[in-house]
Image 1 (cartoon, rainbow, N blue to C red):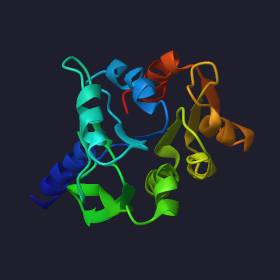
Image 2: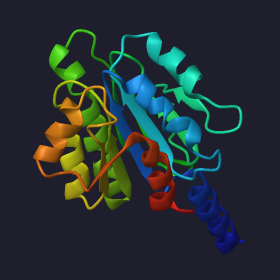
Image 3: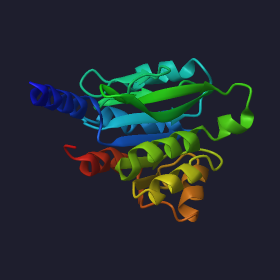
Image 4: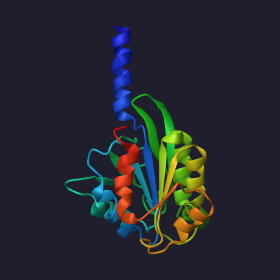
Length: 212
């Protein structure tokens, strides 16, 4: 009886816990870039996806609704302490830092922690870095980082953290970027595995994740 219960719990955890997490960071031009990726992902995409779009509060919820597709992925604005599940896309609310954490609960091994950053410009400017770094600490080599169009260098350190853990890093190429600053900063730092045009990124994610 005990062995049967343990087997059931193990199966339940494997179903509820994603094996892979994809963290997508974007800023200026991000909504259009995300619209070229997220709706193309199949509804059955098995990884968890976390999106950090530099955007004012309130607009991220509208963007999540816009990116959701009746025939494809459903995007939700993340809630504090929300469990991270396979086949799930969560968007960080505007002006809130999103951290991936490990919990002690077998039915909820990974969760989101949100932090209000409206009074800290420095933290707000490094929201992508923080999300990617925390994901790499929890998921290690099972982390995929995607850095899209935007101004500044947010995401560079996060991509480095993912690569240092053996994960995979992808940057949007210059020709398809509205602002190439963020991808270029990561590329110039040598922390990007693949530089891809926007229209190929969704297919590449499907290839990398497979049926995990």
